[in-house]
Figure (cartoon, one colour):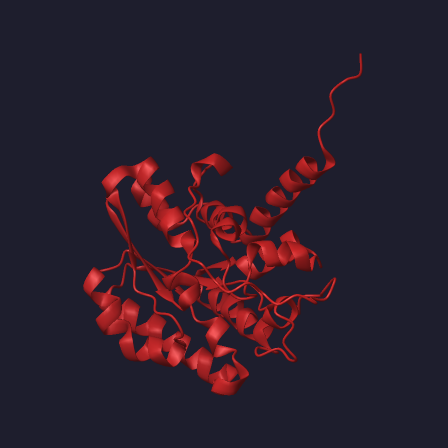
Amino acid sequence: MRKPRFGISKIVAVFCYLVLVSFAAGARRPTSNFVERLDGGDAQTIVVYGTSLTAGGQWTKQVAAVLKARFGDKAVLKNAASSGKDSNWGVENIEARVFPHKPDVLFIEFGMNDAIHERSTSLETAKHNLETMIARTLTEFPDCEIILMSMNPDLKHLILNRPKQSRPHLAQYYAMYSEMAAERGLQHIDLHAAWTAFLGEDVEKAAKHIPDGVHPNGLGCKTVVTPAILTAIGVEHRPDDIPIWPDPPKKKPRQNRQDSFKVES
């Protein structure tokens, strides 16, 4: 009788899962402060602030669901993000959007939209805006934990066959977030590295998880974003712990995609 064998695709999938969460979890501390406080029985308000990747990304609901399953009503997640916004908007609206929630922890991500070439938000301006948001938050809430996030790569030009990339220097903006976190002793969750490890140079795989090239769908969040975040903040989980909801209907991507790509690093 032949012995049953695991399919190569399943082995590869498990390996990729372990690799991608280890990339994003490369922070200096194994557990975020707010998770330690939740473990200790304290209620915590988690506020997420950024672009459409946060405003509409399923990862926020998925993380909230996993935290609720573990900590009950002590973990409350508030989404203060807004689609299409950059760090200029972030500075102008942080008091109105974030402060009323009295955050115990604040996740910030604006690198994706700051890097849009047509917006002319320089790296220096983006850095100044990030510093301002951090400073204002800590002035108002000195005990608030701040977690910076580098999100996914921009693959729209490849998946949708666009003539040029709208964020040619995105990796530099993400690197600035990493450097800022290191300088200030903050946690940095590097989802860009997690996506790079997961996708390799497979455009078909990218299209399955980031159909429009910019916004990960529910599957992309469940497979890459949410497990990487949970691992980084120190919340043990299994893939089945992460729920997924139907994605809103979107236009089908144009064909004639490239067969492979290389993410800027």
